[in-house]
Length: 173
Image 1 (cartoon, rainbow, N blue to C red):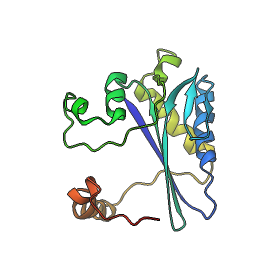
Image 2 (cartoon, rainbow, N blue to C red; image 1 turned 30 degrees about the vertical axis):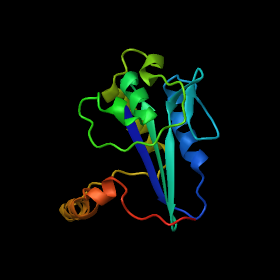
Image 3 (tube, rainbow, N blue to C red; image 1 turned 135 degrees about the vertical axis):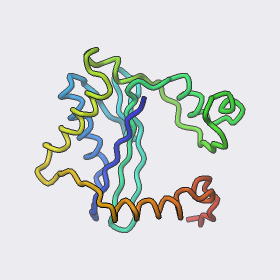
Image 4 (cartoon, rainbow, N blue to C red; image 1 turned 120 degrees about the vertical axis):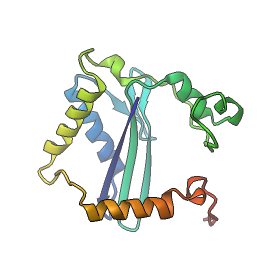
C-alpha cells in the first residue's frame, strides 16, 4: 500500500523542499530518521521510500509525493520499468502508458515502524500532524455543490480518454 500526499497552495515562490521537509519532520515524530536528495526523494538507510512530482500553474503550486508503506515491491519494480510486455502480467492493469522511472532501491516504510503502527493508525497520525503543524490548516468538508462540480469535472475532463492517455498535442519549449 502506498500513501499519496498532495500539497496545493497559492504562492509566487514555490519552495518544494519545504513540503519535503514537512514530511521528514512527521517521520521524525514516528521515530524514523529519513533524509532527502536533490530529486526530492525521501530515503531510509539508502533506500527510497518516497518520490515526488511538482507542478506550477500561474501562481498555484502542487507538490505530490508517495510514501511506500507496505507496497508490493515486485509489482512496483515492474510498473516503474514501463515495459509493456511485463506490465501485461500484472492483474488489473490494462492500457497503461508508463514512463520508465530513474532506478532506485526501494523499501517499505512499515519496516522501520513499530509493528503496532498499521496503515490506519499511520494515516491518523499523519493527518493530525499536519492539522496541528500550522494554525491555518483546517478540515474542509465538501458541500453538495462542490461534489456536483467535482463529478462534472471528472466526467467532462478526467475520465476522457485523451486526458488519461495524454493524447493532447504538446508544444515544444
